[in-house]
Length: 361
Image 1 (tube, rainbow, N blue to C red):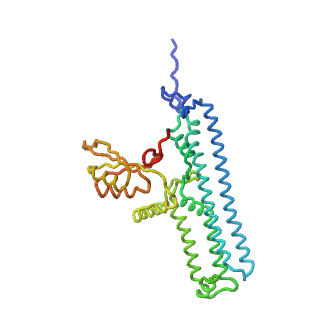
Image 2 (image 1 turned 180 degrees about the vertical axis):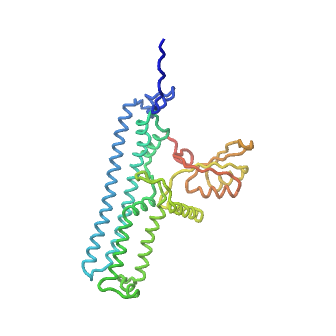
Image 3 (image 1 turned 90 degrees about the vertical axis):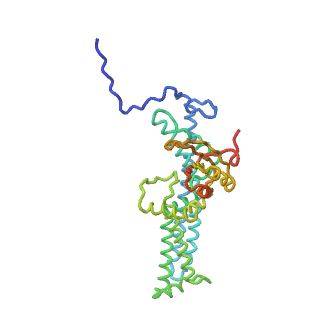
């Protein structure tokens, strides 16, 4: 009897899904009983709608930049057209361009909101279609649902300002500053000394030294903003490199220094962070730690009995949900009660119940 040749394994074949996986109903949500075809069709239309929103706000970003370029060009043309024309127009235009930067940063945050939803669908739904077995991530639908029910910007104002400044507005502000210096130096006649430059820089009742100092502070603040926010990477709509340079490491250490000194992350000052944190505190001084957290932090604490597998010793584990702004306070309280405690802090997607958002019926 002839033997059947052995089948050669296909190295490109995907592993079969588990035998108990019902692929036909894997996309059902909230009891709607949608089959895979109807659900896929709905998701495609939803994706097209969010992509259209994202593109609309992306075009608005270009419009704001065009306003800044046009006004800068008009100011430069007027100032340098006649030697007698005042250089103050360039200072006024700098503040106008700053207004455009704030408008663009706000629009950029809206653009990031729609792009966030698009990226969640691309990384989960469409990747699931292209990479069998057809299995989505467990929490991607919850992220979309939370974004639809409670829309909030995925990035802070500081990151948006810094990113738009580095991408578009830094050259505009530098051109305005350099043009102002050149105008003061050249018109109506060239100057020969620094005191003459300072005297010519005066603007109405404002002395020249004050105008120059204001310009240094103005541009120095913008440059610091661009540098200090360079390491923020919460954006969804940008292609970011994963390589970390020495400069990025320096900025990260600088941010860590401000955290340790001022107990706050400076780039998040304008963020109005509403995220929640889950803290696990492993300690042998459970009573002392819990009393401090209950009294000083004002948050509920839950005790979990645990056992260290390495030492075989019983420990208490306190679980506490708190606001992001309360992290530093919690660490101080725990260290005050037990300097040997072990603390784990992690972000949570959603918290409902007493002290937070109400439970949905």
